[in-house]
Image: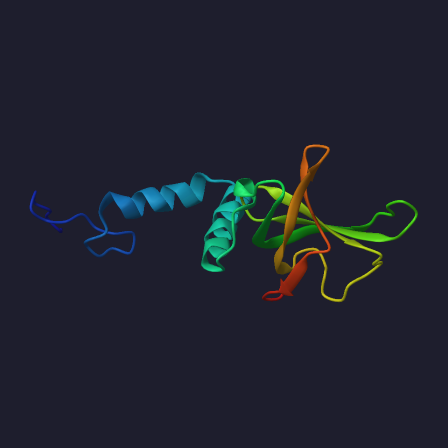
Length: 140
């Protein structure tokens, strides 16, 4: 049997020594957290790596670069003209990306990673970016 003294570091999740309670906390967190919470956490990390502003921090009437995953893509006419609207989620909040005069854009599909840049406005309490510059990221 393996004896553990007060001087011996605790075992990590793989049976070795050294990770302490931090590793156990992370393991318990992953087990007890819901899928949506874990997805949000991963999106927030990747957004930071892309140099984008978290959507929750985007201010109206300012240019921002945002990145995340497209949740929905719909065709919603505005003023009689076609408009492609996509909901971008980064783990902190949602912003609507609207391309006026467009019915479809190749690669703009639900589940796709995207980075967009443009002027943020607020309409009906929702953040919106019209005709943003965008860059498609890794596949869906």
